[in-house]
Image (cartoon, rainbow, N blue to C red; front, top):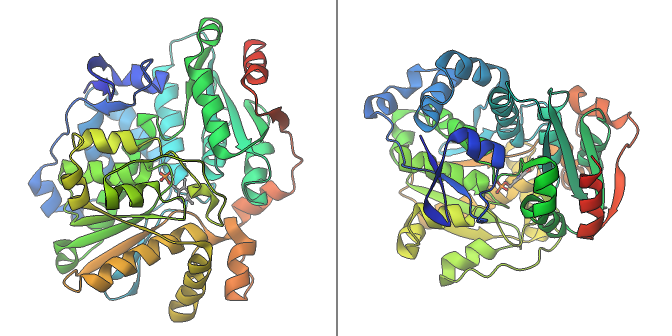
Length: 434
Ligand SMILES: *Cc1c(COP(=O)(O)O)cnc(C)c1O
């Protein structure tokens, strides 16, 4: 399988190059050369297979022979050493729990897979690879932990000062070793701009090997398709018939992975793009006009994105056909008050604790189902464990949330991050001095 740039379909590269480069030099994003078809028999019998077996079959289609089978098997087993269960709240209303990884967010799936794929591709190179990442919270912790102590790779993480939760920050700034964390005096969008600039700067390019692990890296998207197939495998025959999946979205990597799965043959009737008030995509779905803007801070901060990077991939997949996009995706946005009420309602009605991001996915799903009683099954994605957003959630449910031990240990370690002004020349100097 070759990968092309969304800015130039004839610019084809190997998966290795797409993964190591992260972003093509023409500032597009990498896409698979063709959308492989999943065997219909495989879909019919999917419930007979394990998460790892499903993941391998899908990975094989998207990766082809670029990674030998045996190594691909071990990458999948090693990276996905946790489950992604579907939990039922009531008949026809389910949650796909994606927070069972080490940093308690769905981003563990992409980051852990990517770290192992990169490490495989770099096995014979001498130069150290530097990975630079902007984070609105969960990316940083997942990437830092996914790459921690991986030989030959340095990670540089930029996060917006004061705009991520204390637990998120601790998971990023306490590791040290090959992980450098920079506390940026600015927003997530500022961090993302600095990263994009660094990735295309010619002086930096000449002096160090630099790439990114943001969700623009295709090796993070590939494994995210696995859990959509795996979720489908956990449904009964009736539920499989007309399934709607609601995705709490920010940079739209997760939703893109879902759509890619659908295009490969996963029978999903509709996707819901659920956002907070950073509603650029729901607005696009209404008007056909995409207007990126500065992000606004909310209590679902991992979705505070004003210019979602993966939108160009969605456009590319649909060849810019607005009608077809609208046919497959419905979009809804919710503010903080609605989000808080939803956390409370889910707890009171089902004794289930959701975090602020998943609560938005729940609201989006509910809104859709209200107008479509014919739908037999709706799933919303739980992208983070509620303990990651403890103070927000506890206020609504008036009960203390137990912090899982694997999260608690981070709180005791000292902060090792360095401050960085929202200023490219300072970042450039820092990178060139490596
Ligand atoms: C990153 C993140 C999202 C948004 O995912 P995208 O792929 O960027 O749309 C949603 N919820 C949580 C908890 C996240 O960390």
